[in-house]
Length: 160
Image 1 (tube, helix red, strand yellow):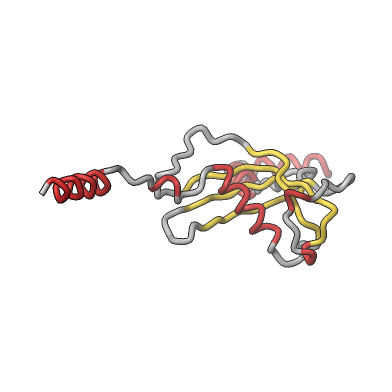
Image 2 (cartoon, helix red, strand yellow):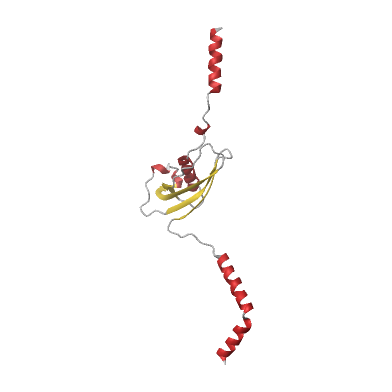
């Protein structure tokens, strides 16, 4: 009877012990390294890239099932993608391209997914200024409509 109680107690302790779901979920560093691997698999990439710098994410919650941001910088190495080597073992290329990457990491699905975009670090981001231009043309058009006779008479005086 005592043996049965010990076994029952052991089973109760094992089932009541908290499981660590965080161990199966990737840390911020793991997510960044996975994103670099995803980038290295993109078509057109011939030389492997390696992590140069990662922006720390103090709010990174390993247990969260939400989309979390990623920001990091990668640099070209001397290793060819076709060699299928571990990029962490490759030396950085002396004049290798540096890319700023940003994206999102999600554990909402199994396996976790990564969405990201990398741009050359030397390039300035393209700013879309359509709204400013549109606002300018609307205001200029309104000014011309209001003052068209004054503009015409001034132009005629200036010409003739």
